Length: 169
Image (cartoon, rainbow, N blue to C red):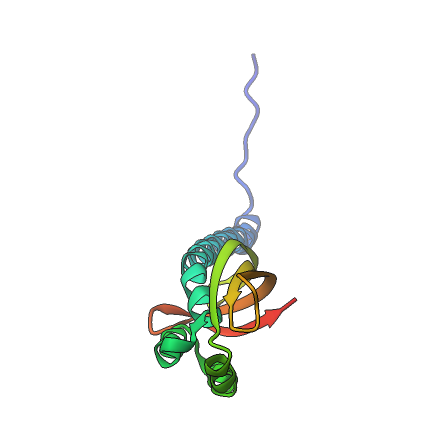
């Protein structure tokens, strides 16, 4: 068997491989960083969605329920779940509703039958909420049930998820 004469690569050729190798390493590191960031964002989004879904039933019940006998307490409870411009809208709406609620001796109890995520991100979650409102008043015989669908937008405020918008659909 004859051994061939193996010559080393010319010096210039070895040096030209260094930039290509450096570029390949940088590309691999960049790809790994992007993958890590996406995984981290995905985890934060999943956590946000779970937290918002956990808060939604209590928030919807507080926002969409009231009792004429304890109207101010009902509204104060609802205010604890709202934020931003929606808090102002909630205050205006409930202020306008109070006189009618007392006059008609209205009692409205809201219960969430189901909720699901429409869109989610670490700082904003939209939920579709199926909401039944059981209502009684002096003008209604017995109890009536209104079945509603509401899109609630929740955002984190000081470590708690609050409703920043509610849209009936």
